[in-house]
Length: 452
Image 1 (cartoon, one colour):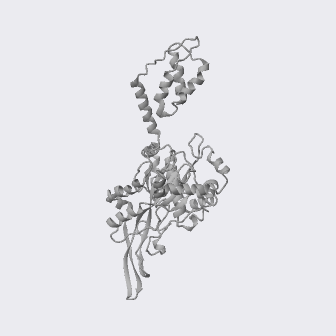
Image 2 (cartoon, rainbow, N blue to C red):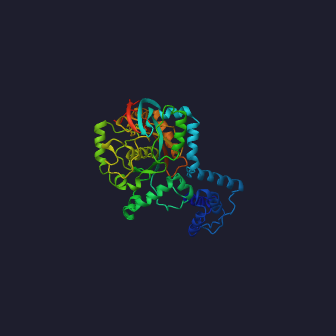
Image 3 (cartoon, rainbow, N blue to C red):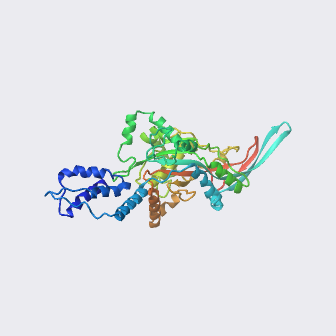
């Protein structure tokens, strides 16, 4: 923009047959600096246009370039529109968090039922001994999905003071100090980032932050880096209330996930997520050998393994999806060979069994890329309950699939120069109400199935 205004300063006097004196170049640049921002382009044009240019032959160019108020107003208005288009969209607020469940769940019960995949899969009986004798509790075994996880993805977690909210913050849910604490998501980002920075020296940290191609798409970029935070979903209780009341007629699996609690933050896992792949290299090979697949996330997006922040793609929308699944896999994976512990990650395990339920092997559900359902809520509200899988990989290679991916990528970049993303993630649960000791439990896993 600055160069464009300097060119304007040179072209204007040429229209009158006079070239600018070399000694005036510094003065021209000073005037341009006053209107350096896109929003002030009208003022910049006025400053440049109103200058008196000294020609090579000593003649003075006219001061009136025909920029009437209407033209300047149009320039300013257009520049403001451009600034608005390239500015970051409004952050996700606490009211957005709770209204999401009301509008998406209560407002569309058929879609909620489709997302939950509610199924009756058995029955159980438990007994609790009281002073008045045995008390039996009968229950139906059910399975369904619960939206109990909130995931945020950033190209680079910022270092911010815990009790301050900078105007240029890249945290997509950061609004104010008070609301950040109430929301929990941005507050825990700041705490984790401060703790993570202290794990190693700042010199190493700064060196990696400035490395080319890690966070910015360039012609030479092969990998893009992302930080991710996996938290308990704050609006899960709203989801439980609506889902349990309208759909869970035979029983409902209450996830014990704690709202706002961080289960994984990549800035606390810098060795395995950022600097060294550690045992993830071995796990990647074992995963491919065992399941004979690489693109397990589907749609030609990529693979869950290796679960690191470096993703082989130059598409920020796709890398945000991959990072969200990788981060959740670290804390949710219940196959011992591919658990977060096996990958030498620092995390808190997400609960795999529902509250007040039996916890036998038949109650285990898959916790992987093929079972997770994602709902993008920022920077735009995407398709609900999206499950990525290899069955749609061929579709992504077609013209229609490519156009669909291009549309999502365009929507992701609109008013999102920070390239940040937020997801709500649904996980499957299978449960049967337990109150005391087991008498019997007959469970036949339904469509959700068991971990493979």
